[in-house]
Length: 419
Image (cartoon, rainbow, N blue to C red; front, side, top):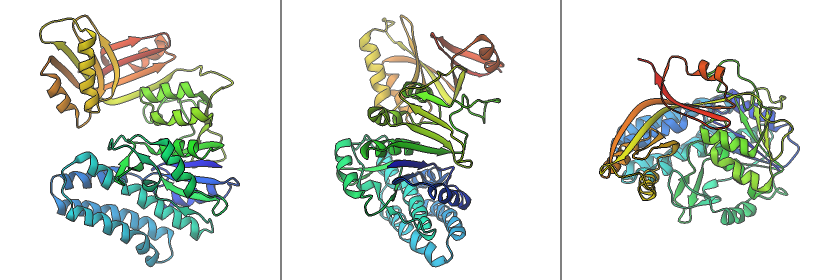
């Protein structure tokens, strides 16, 4: 069997969903389809959640109505009758409305997973039903009942053993040759919905591949494959046809958006190749990530992370930054789910580059109890693998560099526009 994952950009329109039919129609293997929420639905559901958490239920319901209308317009282009659209959408949105009306927003992370996870439920219901209308028989699965996780809401960890048992019971390719399930979501042992982190649908596809002993996993993207840079930011990008698992982990950790950082481990454990292929030109090969490759990456790879914050900590008593102090500082950051992407230390201070999240102000406030804290917002972190002087000069032009690091293969620059 093989696994196909279709992201939000692929299923943001009726045309995209129809393209899934053309791709799936050519598959002769048993197939498990993993689907993300459509388009910007996750962002829209986050706005619903924000209103709900502020007890602005009328505004939350109004925002939800926009989400429903977006999906209704897509359904009206896919299905012949309004009745079919109603059969799919009304039960789901009725359930969401009841949660909003009757619920109390007392735990952001828990409610995030309960409400935002509906985006994937909606998309897979629509796609599974549309495949059936196109004579592609498939069985819809609720991954909240199959992928068992811990209760680390918004960043849940999957219990692989229990999930394997559940998934193998639910999937029988003697009955159906195609199954359709959601990316990004699962549930804890109590049945409370959980999510696996933003862009976690890639991770779901990898886990399904691991648990069902897939021959391969393919992620369909709106790009030709894995490029050496984001074409929306950099010009003259080049396709990288082959990467090792180690290459992919390194790039993902640096912030490359093409692959979710947690995706690689389940695949590497079972030596399952991961293909990244172009959704709109499926005849093209794209890129492959696997254990051994023919040619190493011989061009510079550029990764730009925006909305970064440089945080510098200095002990208030001017003591040296010893191990105990470091352990405490990183413990605080970890507690507040702050991901550190760069570290630089001296005898009396430590500086870290972190993502600007809603939790950061609380973390900085707690750190200020023990440290003198300074910080700079609105920064960019540029990582160049295979760096050279010319590339560095071109990509950092007109930038003020606040911090830089060089290792054998990699250069990193934390920077902002010159004033």
